Length: 113
Image 1 (cartoon, rainbow, N blue to C red):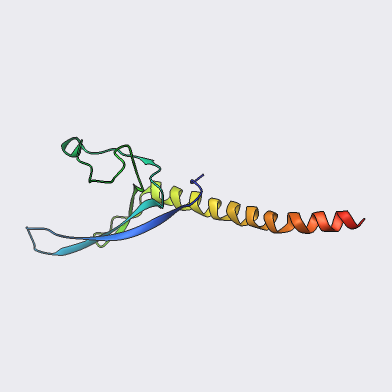
Image 2: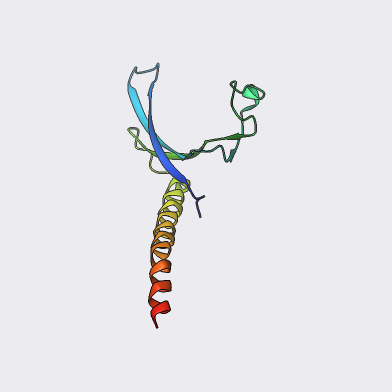
């Protein structure tokens, strides 16, 4: 299940290969949050490099995988699973909101009996 207050963000990357000079696009997905909740996992060459004011241990986003590309590469299984988890979280949040609205009405209703 995805974390509360987290959503999936898609972004496009364009890459030109030197051989043919063709430009290809790739669409990737990442988990996004308002608060830094994802553990940082920097590449070895980037270890210790954290911008000022940033949390050195946690970040607000986490890469999931490829959604698609102009090269014919399909969606990564991790992305499919992430979208399923996010849909489940949205359903659960909707149920919680409905319960919050129903509870005061139930108290009023049962208080009249």
